[in-house]
Image (cartoon, rainbow, N blue to C red; front, side, top):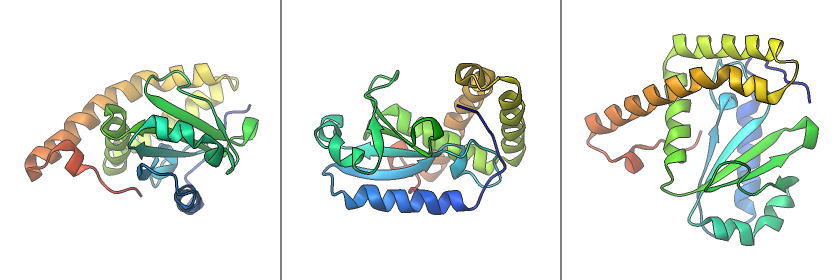
Amino acid sequence: MKIAVVQHRSEWKEAFDEERKAILALGIPGIVQVHHIGSTSVAELAAKPVIDIMIEAKSLEGLDRNKEQIESLGYEAMGEFGIAGRRYYRKGGDNRTHQIHAFEAGDSNILRHIAFRDYIAEHPNVRKEYGDLKIKVASQCDSDIDRYCDGKNDFIKFHQAKALEWINQRSDQDGLSNSESLPCST
């Protein structure tokens, strides 16, 4: 699979909105929220053209019981796929168009993803640096996804820590707990 990082496309928001509606139309009980995450959710950020979706669910077992419904939208259920406490679904095979990361409500991964998304969106210099890094790494990784991820890893870890500090400071200033301060899905 070729790894291509492209400039931001306005149609990514619409693609997420359509997929969110389709997911919610399945009527799966226990879905709390559906978020647009990842680079396609951040305006002006270069990205692989794969829509990242995060589902908050009351229980992962509830999602497991309804995996056929999610698969009916063209997704392949992959189980935890390397992250304990996650359910991962991908759509499009080698030409992936969407991927879903599902966690139980309250899982720390939810805050981590949302904090990073919002931090990148609110910090234009960091957003540009991240986009430039992704373009560079994609051009040098010979379409090896592990090399691509490794090339971004230090940047992501550093800025995820900063993002969590940033969102916690915002929560403290607003007098809200982390769960109350989470923004609605985009």
